[in-house]
Every structure is written in structure tokens, then in C-alpha cells.
Image (cartoon, rainbow, N blue to C red; front, side, top):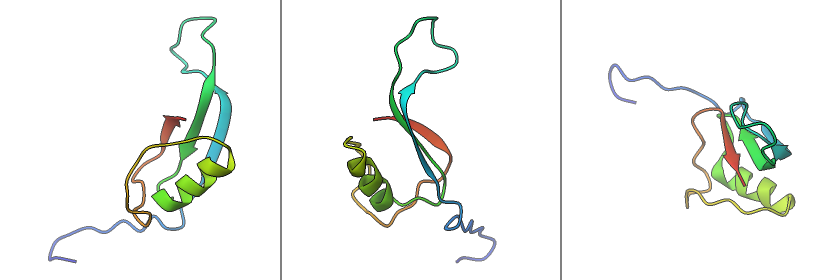
Length: 77
């Protein structure tokens, strides 16, 4: 690390949650749900690919399986 830099260790902040009927809170009433996944910061792309595959879905992302996602996000799958 360089002088004055900041490193955030997110390895222990892992979490992958699937929702097969996700609807955005601001969606119009009656909007049909769709599959989505919520990912915490410590999850690597490789872990995400494995989890999504195990749920019989597909996701497009990085080609480096060891790179982590940097924030809590919801991704339609």
C-alpha cells in the first residue's frame, strides 16, 4: 500500500441472498417480481458465479474470479 492510502478488508463481510420474486419498492402496484440476488462486499465474483449457477441462473460480470464486489447491491438475475 502506498503512503496515505486506505485499505478496506471486506473478506469477512460475505453474504449472498436470493429472492425469486423481487420487486423494487418504488415499482407501480401490480409489478411482477423477478429473480434477484443481494451481494455483500466480501463476496468474490467466483463465489457469486458458483452461487448463481447453483440456483440455475446466469449473471454477467468480471472475468477475475478473485475480485470482490465493493458494496451491497441487488442484481436482477
